[in-house]
Length: 143
Image (cartoon, rainbow, N blue to C red; front, side):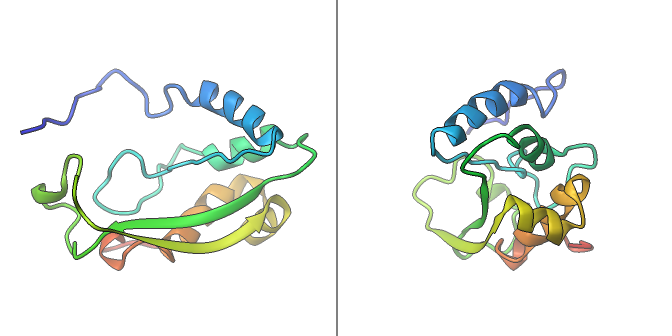
């Protein structure tokens, strides 16, 4: 049985600055950068109240000549209706996954859709809600 590690003294943003710095270099060379705002493995899609990783990326990558495109992708485990079940905690090896490709936005389109750069992360969660499995959405979600 695998136990989930306890990182009580580690911030969810630990390593983010370095990842962002390297990610912007990668984007500048025409590469792709993957951000997983739900990487904390919550049982439902929910926004971290103080976290603004997408806005931070868009602001810091403002100088890139090629610009940035944001593609929303939802990933779910086929047949799962309860993401709080102990059966799906851990690595989920040999499971079938369903990948849903959502909309793609330029930085300018994302800022306009979000009504400003400061609100882009909240907007991103509403876009993710369109592509994640319905059973992953919070029961009382405002998304």
